Length: 190
Ligand code: ATP
Ligand code: MG
Image (cartoon, rainbow, N blue to C red; front, side, top):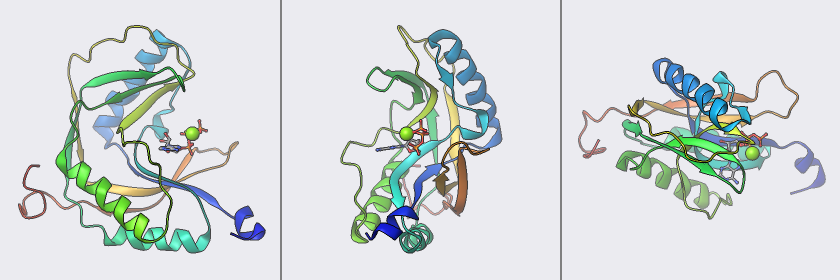
């Protein structure tokens, strides 16, 4: 990448954004966790689940990502957000699923394969789907989620992480529907 291209990069990732009823519940959960663990809770409008983090891209790469998003044939799926977790190394408190739905795994695999095919370098760490609830947290024992949060994912998005200080932290650049499982050929298990 030339110096001028490097200076004109944007930081992007593919993600799922919660539907309004799920957002309501996650918002209350973020409040609750920040009260228990301290730290800085994720703002309501920023609550999301990253699918694939891409990182800094040029305009030309961004165009390719938009094309890839449009090519993906994903099936809709429902997640059961049924557990809370804490990573001491980055002090993140999060919510996630004990089991990843097979359609989510396929969506991740399909995005990753297409991105690799187009020369994007991706994280080698295993994919741990999660929603960051609080940063700079210090958590001991976390509460059990009495009631799992059911999140029906019907679309995914390409999102820009905006440089701070910006009014917003994230900006959705484009989104694509996930087809419902009525078509059993797309995703039998969902
Ligand atoms: P900040 O870095 O300012 O605290 P953030 O982590 O939410 O905020 P980004 O670093 O731009 O913002 O990340 C955007 C999303 O991608 C977040 O969900 C973040 O957890 C995820 N992410 C960032 N870096 C990676 C990475 N190396 N691997 C996987 N996911 C990542
Ligand atoms: Mg970050």
